[in-house]
Amino acid sequence: MLPRSRLWCVFELAAYKKVNPCGMISFRPLFVERILVILLLSGASFGLCFVLVRSGSGGASMAYVGYALFVIPYSIAAVLLRRNFREKHMLRQELETFDLSKVSCAKEFDRKFILAAIEKWYGSQEAFTEFVQTELRQQLEPLLATSRFPTPYLLLVFASLITASLEFFLALWKGGAPPACLVSFAVGILVGVDIFLVGALIVLFSHLCDRLAPQRFGRLDHLQTAVLMLPLTVVFGIGSSMGTVAYSSSLEHGFLFALACLLLGCFIWWLDGAASSCVCCSQPSPEHEVAPSHQTACSPIPEVTENP
Image (cartoon, rainbow, N blue to C red):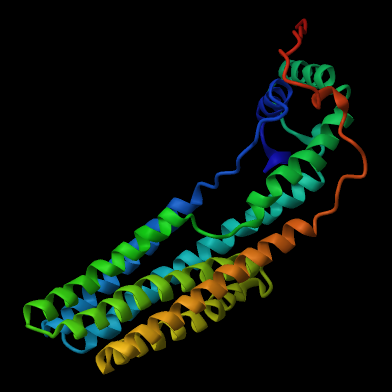
């Protein structure tokens, strides 16, 4: 968070924007990869359990174990996501109320040197504070508003589920299933469930974790996570069952089910994007222009000297 960060981090930010005022600053959260690992392990465990169930070596109870191995890791991921999204919301608030005088620094000499440089580059400490509260905040706002996983990461999650479904597809093929049955399975399960339905639920999962990030029930906050997970679990269970029924019925039903999942995915994708756009558009525009000292073309950093 900015007010609690080291002053040298602020100095690097000020120096970069002075040298390259047209340059973009990217926000890259580090927690996304940790959440992705949990989702991958969850999908792989779920697929393994259902392969054991269908092969007859796991018993009927293994299906419940599979759902548990799917729901529990996703619940843990929901807790972690909500916690990280809360930090993201705090960062947005701290950008709005940024105060350079409250930024910590270990050595007083470093503080004097950095503040002198900022005053020389931006005209005053107040001008730099205004830059952070307005221009920098507006530049980072679209990145902070999004809650969606990157598309390549979604493909990895799909892969963990598709590999299990491919086991059943190969079993049908080796067992001499007719081509219509193979195509129906590929469309209804591989595409409809593993890609469209799961993709829609992951986008909705991340969106709900972002919107429900604030703690509203104190020590009972985990109930909020349970409420978040309940509809997702129900929709996934019902959708998986409907996909099985659809591909087993006919090729046409398999295509209709995949189309329904595609429409659901497009709607949730649009809803998430529209919500993020509304957050960005709701941010007020700056009341004052940013100091012209860092709106000019790129130029070398003026030399700043400070005697100890």
